[in-house]
Length: 257
Image 1: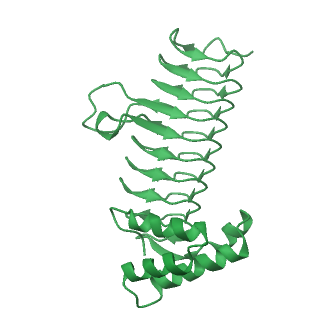
Image 2: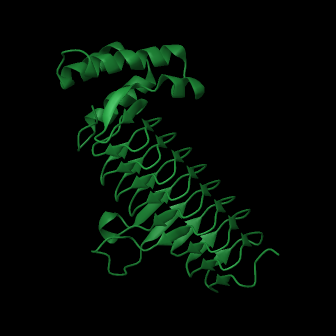
Image 3: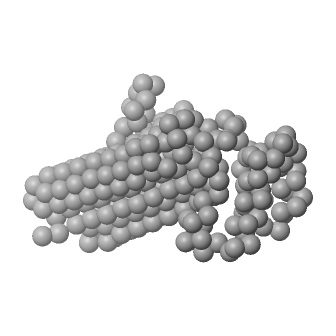
């Protein structure tokens, strides 16, 4: 049966014709679910929320619920989710707040393992992995292809760069650098994520350039501004190095070192 008779679906919800809804699921007004998606037993979807095609929402997930922010007074905010995302059991995704721009956004092809949490006004890119109980506080930006390890927490207003790898049980209170392994109870940078980048098809030349950039930043005696200038002068042919330097220059909280 495509939609179980015990499911509660608001008349104002907009579900594509082939969306499957399991027993005791609840889908509220203002929720739009794209074609090919599934909503499993006991999942809760609240709106305004747009969920893209072919998303899989597992039992007891809560998607589009009110932000956990004491300043929230019921104003209309939203959640926008792209296609091909997986939300495993007990995942929680909150809508935005008026003060934070009004929207939480998630790109495409992301994997949220059980108990992962994305708070209000976060912006998650595409092709990311959130391991079990990985947690984002409000206003966090996670860029494409990043991995956030199990039981890790990212402080509000921090950024996680492209292809960053955050190890399990890590506490991130500053921006986590792209391409870098960030690990620890008070996070530290532990070098370029060589194995991960190799698996993702980065060229040996690009990886070696990133390693040189990392040495200039963290293992030389150069001041940060001088190291960035060296990277931009000597490694500018590599887009990855230009992006790394730009990520650091644009940081407002500082970066994990």
